[in-house]
Amino acid sequence: MYIKDIFAQRKPVISFEIFPPKKDGSIEAIYSTLDGLKDLKPDYISVTYGAGGSTKDRTLEIASLIKHKYGVEALAHLTCITSTKEEIGTMLSQLAENDIHNVLTLRGDLPQEADFEFPNPLHYNYACDLVKEVKNRGGFSIGAACYPEVHPECDDMQKDLDHLKAKVEAGADFLITQLFFDNELFYDFLDKTKAMGINLPVTVGVMPALNKNQIHRMTSLTGASVPPKLARMMDKYEHSPEALKEAGIAFATEQIIDLLSWGVDGIHLYTMNRPEVTREITMNISTIRDYLTRN
Ligand SMILES: Cc1cc2nc3c(=O)[nH]c(=O)nc-3n(C[C@H](O)[C@H](O)[C@H](O)COP(=O)(O)OP(=O)(O)OC[C@H]3O[C@@H](n4cnc5c(N)ncnc54)[C@H](O)[C@@H]3O)c2cc1C
Image (cartoon, rainbow, N blue to C red):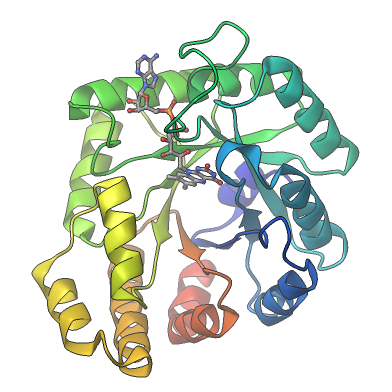
């Protein structure tokens, strides 16, 4: 099923994100992750695409597993910056052959030491170019990324929003946000997108804070701000993984309840391949989810 049709049918749409095991790691590990997620009834599960396409075969294999073995709709992430147009064409054909018809079209991060020129006529240089290509091919529901706190390479919110609008006009069907911890910033961002006529479903990427170093890595990479309440919590419990897990689950639950009360289209939980955490958060909002789905 196309994910754009899932958004048309129900609200909120609840989805999960997993990542493939490293190249030399066993694929078996992903079975226990998926075993732990499937009965939480996600509307779809997405699989990331390792930086520079490092996991592309695994992304395809796992997306296929999600759809055909677990019976859950799959969303394959796809980044274009380090691949030629021809390689991207092959990947899209393989996705279609495996009956995967939902793709998150991304540029990917620019590699530190690229062995190619940027921009490059042999590559799709921005996600917008990839969206156009996927739209022209047909047969896919197209997701794209958006950045409530501005993409770190862009020095101006309005410019970043113009680039987002270009992706929407090129054919994106739905948007997934970069992680953030301050909902008010997201509500301001949505006001701006709506004022520009961007009316696609927007689903919110939520990452539970379970490890202070990991959150610091992510926030320095993405530019997401850390509210004082979250910083306090991580400082207080950083030396007790179990205490921080409990607090991180509570923080994510509270963040999601506020987003759902506001009326967001969907929640996309970064599972970090820890199904027990995703389970607790999903169970914490199960009555709210049922209520909102019925009303
Ligand atoms: C939900 C989500 C999932 C992700 N999954 C993955 C993943 O699986 N694998 C992975 O490697 N990375 C992933 N990323 C990270 C993503 O690849 C990076 O954030 C990347 O740097 C930008 O990708 P994009 O698709 O947003 O790029 P774009 O939309 O192309 O934007 C990139 C930058 O270029 C600017 N820009 C856009 N168009 C133009 C233009 N025409 N001229 C000048 N500047 C322009 C934008 O303002 C922005 O600063 C994900 C990000 C999100 C939010």
